[in-house]
Length: 278
Ligand code: FAD
Ligand code: A2P
Image 1 (tube, protein in one colour):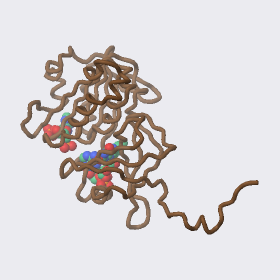
Image 2 (cartoon, helix red, strand yellow):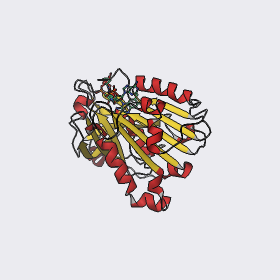
Image 3 (cartoon, protein in one colour):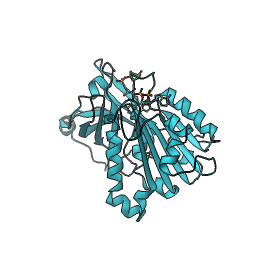
Image 4 (cartoon, helix red, strand yellow):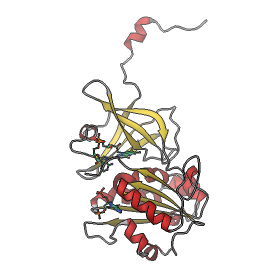
């Protein structure tokens, strides 16, 4: 005999939004950038580097959703997101005020091209990001699989100002001290991850656009790497449309070809946002 829920008990259940997840922490990095963590739906399986649709209920009672890279790795119990604050942005003008205990909507259908499976095996894996484009790499940098597949992982991140680099800088520092990752990866794991942050508008120890630092050879000289070649090197690109377009030209100049989930090759690209920038 199947059990039936008494009518009065069902009526007492709290009303929940469809696909609602609860915010567990929020951190504001600058007046334009913040990160937050939410509960993870038990059913959600994703590959590090993928994105999902998240959002809030709009004033019209309909969900207001936007694409967001999951910044946490596939093994994490929670989900992390790293977000821009667009002053008049339909979603982020509200999302930037979210607090612990409040709910967001999360559609559990992860997709994306910035996944390890979209690349052929190689020796070195390069992550090239501007601004919030570091989010998918925040996930991949914390995935042991990344270090199992590659001898070296190089994170190049460029922002206008030093303060905008802080999320990535702190993340890399945490990864290098992460006992669980160290245990999984063995001694010397931290040495596999090279970090190359630059600014373009504020004076800092390393400066310049990623594209310029690659074509001039400055990045290679600073990192102690001979260069990028199609046999050894694999790349993932995430930034504005202009950045992605220029990076494709640079990588193809080194002889790399663009791949996809269905056709793995030497590099993959995804937009960090749609639009011309703010
Ligand atoms: P929108 O109306 O969506 O955008 C208004 C304008 O703001 C855009 O035209 C653009 O000029 C600018 N803008 C939007 N997003 C950004 C950004 N991230 N950086 C700089 N300028 C921007 N955004 C994130 O903050 N974090 C992510 O991890 C992220 N992942 C994405 C993954 C994909 C595949 C895509 C397509 C977009 C992603 N975005 C991400 C952008 C995100 O979907 C929204 O555009 C952003 O949250 C702003 O929403 P909005 O409604 O406030 O403004
Ligand atoms: P720059 O300051 O020289 O424009 P934004 O804040 O506009 O999204 O830019 C984020 C970072 O990406 C900035 O450091 C910016 O450098 C850099 N950038 C913007 N467009 C390109 C591009 N086409 N190629 C390389 N870097 C770019």
